[in-house]
Structure formats: C-alpha cells, structure tokens
Amino acid sequence: MKLWGQILGTLLSGSRGRKGAPQAWAFKSWKTYSSPAGPLSATGMVNHWTRVFEERGIPEARESSEYIVAHVLGAKTFQSLRPALWTKPLTPRQLECIHELCSHRLQRMPVQYILGEWDFQGLSLKMVPPVFIPRPETEELVEWVLEEVAQRPHAVRTQDGPLILEVGCGSGAIALSLLSQLPKSQVIAVDKEEAAVTLTHENAQRLRLQDRIRIICLDVTSEGCCTDLWPWGPVDLVVSNPPYIFHKDMEQLAPEIRSYEDLVALDGGDEGMDIITHILTLAPRLLNASGSIFLEVDPRHPELVSSWLQGHPDLHLSLVGVREDFCGRPRFLHVQKSAP
Image (cartoon, rainbow, N blue to C red; front, top):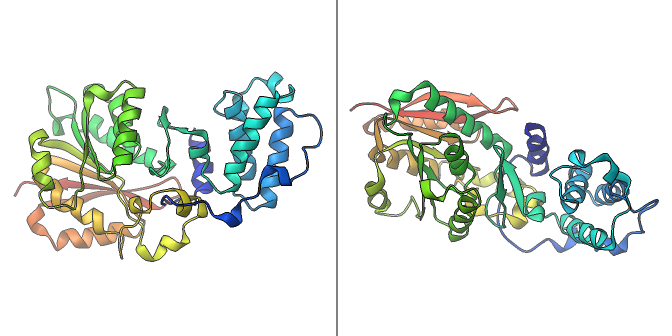
C-alpha cells in the first residue's frame, strides 16, 4: 500500500487544497473521443483511458484509469482483480460507470473523491470533497506516534491507553488509525469545519470506533477554546497535520487541489506557522507533565519551530526530534513538555 500511496502522493503533487468549481478548460466529455480499439474488456478500457488521460495531460494516467476500472469491478486495485476479469467483456452498465468516473478525472477531480473512499493505515475511509484527503506521508506520522507510545509507556496513563488530542481531524484518518492500533486509547478530535466533523463521525461509525472518540467542532484559534477542552484533559499526546503551506506557495498547488479540496486546511500563513504556533501555545495547558506533541510540517519548519520555541521559554516546550518522510525531507516534529 505504501507504493500506491506514493503514486497518489505524486498525483496530488505532494501537497494539500480547497473546494470550488471544476476548471472548465480541463473538461471534455469522453464522447468526444473515438471508441476504444479492440474488445471492451477491463484491460481494453484501462489502455483506452490511459491514452485519453495522457492526451489531456492528466497526471498518473495509467494509475488513474486502473483505479477507476478496478473500482467499477469491485476491487481496490487492478492487480488484485482475478486474471479472468482482465479480458472478460464488460457489461453496458460497467462501461457507462467507467465513462462517467473517467469524465470526472478529466475535470482533474482527485481519484480519492471519484472512488468515494481511500485506504489509510489499512483502514477504508470515506472521502467526500472538500474535506482534506490524507496523504501517504501522514501514515508515517501515525507510525512515529505508535512507536513513541510503545517505547515510553510511562509517559501515558498506566491504567489505560493514551488520551490523544488531534487538532484538525479532517476525514478522521489519524485519529481512527491510532484508535484502531491502540485498543485502550481514547481520542478527542477537533476541527473547525462542520464537513470534516461530519465525515469523521461517519468514518468512526463505519469502523465501529465511535465509542472511543469524542469529535468536536472547534477552532483552536478562537478565544476560550482551551476552556472547551479542559473537561476532557489532561491529554498524553497532541497530534496534528495542520495547515502548513506557505501562503506564497498556494498558487503552485495542483489543479486537483485548488479546485476540489479545502484551501483552509492548507494555508498556514506567510511562513506556514499560523496554526502551528496556536497549537504550541495551547498544548502546554492541556498536556500532562511529560506529554508530547507530534506535528507534520513543511521541510522549512524544523528550524523555524526551534527558533520560535526558544523565543517562548514560558511554554516549557522543547523540540526533541525531527524525522524525514519517505522522500528524505524533514517532515515530522516531536515537541515535548518539560517541568517548569
């Protein structure tokens, strides 16, 4: 799954985006193209739509067509289909579905939204625009948190699993992955967007994890937000994949992102630090004595965060770890609370 995650990471330009109308220039109906050559089989349709996507400059043309055809045939990937289905003639209904979904891809709609679901850490999550699509890098953030809990059991409540606060839950990918792999854990998941809160609720119920998660519509930049969280704390861990794109870089995002995903989930302000600093300011009041913060950030942020923390000694937070993503970029931070 890591390989497929990297492919889709490339498809979405390794970043994140907003809701909006499809770009008209990117769309032409499949009917403007000649009929597929050869038999109307799964393989034939993959080859046909790969050519169409390549002609229209759609990224990862073959992977896009394979995912769509496999989805219509009830599989996660084309390679997982029974070989007999590769050459079996498709029904008119299957052909119609493939044409319709591929037309959405021609509009630069992300594959995850087209399929309506996506796997993250082995969990099948519902995906709905404009809620932010979890990227493969974020799976590594989850893995680091799991390692930390396993290596430092004394840092969490001994009688139970850890109590975790996730800021910006989106589809619920991080929170639900942690819940599924830490059977005694509990999560407080917050997001300021109602669409994200609703989708996290749906995914929690889909995975039967709703009993161990509290999902709150909350803006961590609002006055008094800490008061809303105090009744559930202190927490052992704060985890977040916050908006961290530098504002000047927003225009460079791929059309898939700019036209469909929520740009509020991406834009971190001039230096990408706006929400990060809010989390760091809020966390000490919510964490237990030896609690930790895990963040996914831009590769330029480790130095910026370290400098910011040095300028705010009253928070009693220290940057104790930086980890690279699978592309070798410094992407994840571990910040720890120390005694006053």
